[in-house]
Length: 321
Image (cartoon, rainbow, N blue to C red):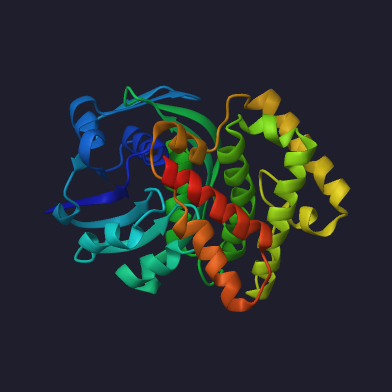
């Protein structure tokens, strides 16, 4: 059975970007992929273009049961049926496991599969798009954050961050990864909801005051949910999330519009991955993200009417696709 320094579950845009960088830097990497994507990688390797141009030959396993173990497992699949995707890996000897998926359910699922002591928190603030040709367009390299769930910055966190940095993927260690994950989720909810409903490039809806107002209100609902869980939101690379939750709404809208103008200049073609999924006819990662948050809010008695409405609306869009 195969063993590797890094095993990456999922070979979409983010998994391919990380895998190509690690392999190009000489690290032992194996990709867990299936179907046409597995065939593409086996035949042609990983090809990344955009911010960098990389081509790497990486072993690919179409059957995850063939993985014997890995020092670090990185889960980079869409947050759809994650528990089922992890089930065939329960036998594997995994040193550390982290997920760069969207949503807040991921760490719980990793802990159930491998034991909480092996789980690291993580979030991705880099972007790419898997093209029909099998190449990946690398569009943003703003960082991959890793941290212990208890807030420590351990040797294993430092090692993973150093390896990623040296490979060309910007990375940093966090001493409050749970708060960072919640903060990223607050921003992602607004971006995901508006991208799928408007079908516009990111800067276009961020620069629209009406859409910016909707995003602010979604962020604030997630902020209220975080507070109910005892989580204090922190600063984030895309939006100053705590500020959006605290200042007057008009000022918050102005902040979002200013972020949109920055996207217009620096990333004019940027599109949230959820919009890429809709346009490609792929399923939306809805239940494990918005659905999980709505369920949590109901359980805690936190009113999130806008979040619930988008959850219902996006469900219709997902079913129609």
